[in-house]
Amino acid sequence: MFKLWSELNPKAHKELKPDFGLRSWTSLKTGEKYTIWKHLEDHFFNKDIKQKYDPEYNRNIQYYEFSGSEDEIREKKKRISFTIMRINEAYKANNYVPSFLEHKTFNAACHDFYNLFSEGTENVVLELLSIFTDTILIERENKQIRRIEDETDPQYEERLEAWRWESFENFATHINEVFNQFCLNIQITRLGFVPKQEQKIEEEIYKPVLTKLSNPKWKEVNRDLSDAFEDYRKKDYSGCVTHTISTIQAFLQILVNGKTGQGDISKLISEARKSKLIPDDDFSIIFFDQLESYMARTRQEKGDPHPKKEYATDKNARLVLNLTMVFFEHSL
Image (cartoon, rainbow, N blue to C red; front, side, top):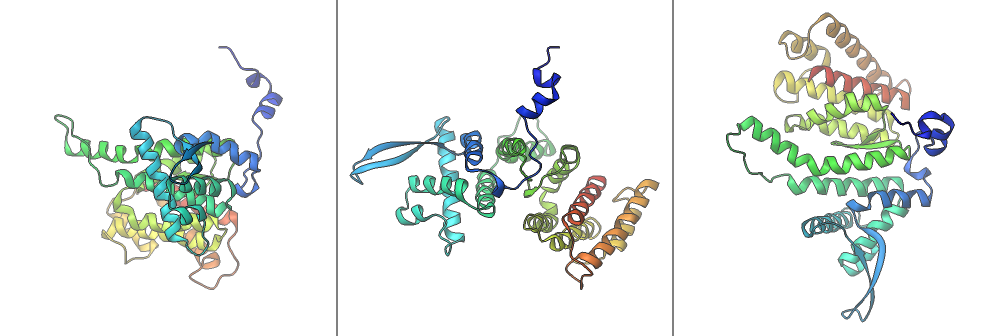
């Protein structure tokens, strides 16, 4: 098989695809942000602005180009509009979308969208992309698809679930690939933006677990897990530890009792094992016992519900997150 020069020469590979180490959005240069936009603009709009005379304004107006079929263009325009309108309503005091607030036009929405992406702080950019992604999900949230002849109810529900996540998965796959090339320390999942993991952990644990947890049954689990990821991104590592451990408790309560509200982790693990709701082989028994002991100690010493001996660190929070995902992967 023919090998590329970069496959034969490690120095060439390093030059062509440098490893910047994990870095934040804030650390990117203006040119890098523009390059990222150009790689993603098929999901948004073409930044190369076109000037066109508009008789209503009696002057040239900026128009933004969209690619795709008529349906695809209509869909993209709706996503941009809804995203900017939601930001305008949610964050009035900071006035993040001044052009839209002033003119209430679609072109003003495009102008503000691009400015937020290219000039906003990390929190603003990730909120912009989060709302845009949520808008994608809302499009198909309550819609149905046509049944296939002789299709069973479980087959239909499985296909419907895949269809409802299809647009999200396409966007998430692309944005994660681009972010990965720029060594950004975040990735997008079904629960929102989460800290970047090693590729093996990401592919074999995080992605399949978050896919399974997207079932409405685990709504309360997802709420706390989403809060944990948000705390981690904000560097509130003690808050991250607290919310992460709460997800295990919520998961076990739903598993054992059918709803959240009662039972501590130790008792729930014991009941779940007895009822064969989680594995009870020798390895699993040791794993669950050690996990419960470690989580209880970490929550006591570094979490928020009790007076802390010390604040949790990035390393503490990441370990708790990863152990929790392994717990879910082993239990689901």
